[in-house]
Image (tube, rainbow, N blue to C red; front, side, top):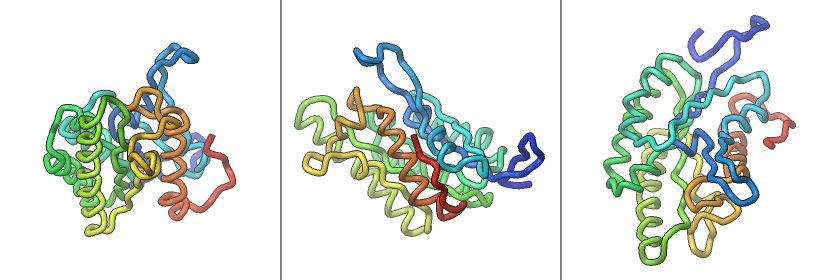
Length: 217
């Protein structure tokens, strides 16, 4: 059945695919307290909150650009016919100084392909950054804000769900990525990935699948 998958006990459940780059893979840099690289994808936290009534699939490739995401979108999303796909991309493009409008064109392709095949897309804004000195840092933040405005405006026009990860993880005063949510200034901590799962559950999926008392962590 489209958008559903049969489980071992014979029941069918909706499938959600979390699609993107290292922020979807859940990449975390090493720290003195945790010297080994690890991955804590937000999709795992979302699965815990939703429980067995939904199957969450993580499809994240570290270092990927949005053009590369679009190239594998049919194979990894459309051909699997999920009920929903969460799309988070653009951080790596911005790191290579791609124009926000160019990045948005790639994101729009994926949003539109999902809509055309009956899959509910959920857009996520790109989080902020806290690395480098000013004014370089300010320029990086402005470009993220420019891209996120394009994402938000598109979602408003097309009635697509949009979760604002930038606002939820940035310091209000500086607009930098909050230290509590990142240990390297770019990727998220476990708390940051859990925060994204919490936002997706509260703002999108609880309304689709019903609320649960399960904790995110």
